[in-house]
Length: 199
Image (cartoon, rainbow, N blue to C red; front, side, top):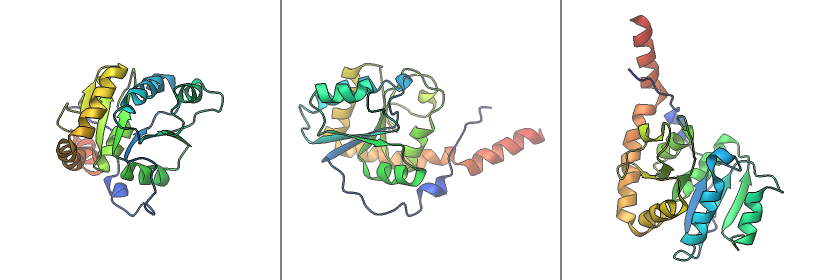
């Protein structure tokens, strides 16, 4: 039996704060900051292409990105300063409030174990795009509760544009995630742990 990590689903159903005025008509969140294993450069390269079809797309990069980091330079060099916000570290409630109001979460990692950020997005009923690496396929089933992609900017771009163009598909994925996430709620997971210990 596989026993997964989980989230406290009730925390994602409470009032998280005031509605935010987001900067784009189509808003993305990348939860990796400047961590190299999260491949933020792939996210930025993809955004540069996406902007051609969605000029007012906006990306929120959650997490710490130092002022002299190459990602900030990349954003400037590609002329994406109006399309990217660096949020810095956000306390859990503020992060969840932002997550609740964006259109989708994108994870471009080159390696992952079992990313809780995906569970949190699903807990908010969000569509997710994630690279098909590590434990991610144990969370995301392609075209069912998210989109799995190769570790490649063009593939990430295709997935973003697919979900942008297919609003009904995105809504279907969002609704499926609200159901799918229930298996990752800590309450049933703890029951399984206790059952295994008793054995």
